[in-house]
Image (tube, rainbow, N blue to C red; front, side, top):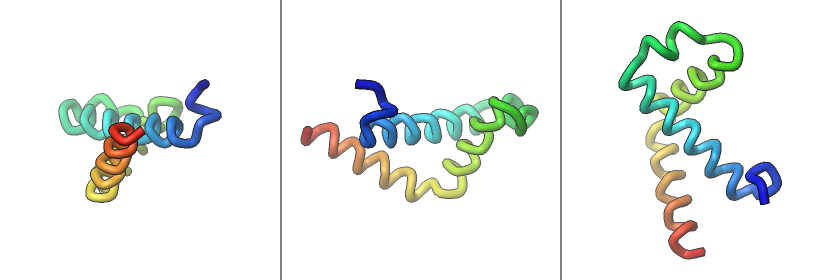
Length: 71
């Protein structure tokens, strides 16, 4: 089943995208800062979400990890 049809998998993919974009922006900020528009701009926006809402993203990561361990 693809991640588009399973809500839990879709949330995991979005959370992974946010965490990865935030890590890339912290390691190499020039890559995402140059491309704030277009398709690559999605990664820049995800990095901003990860930076500004980091406590909530961390809690979501813990919840998803517990969900994966239990199920």
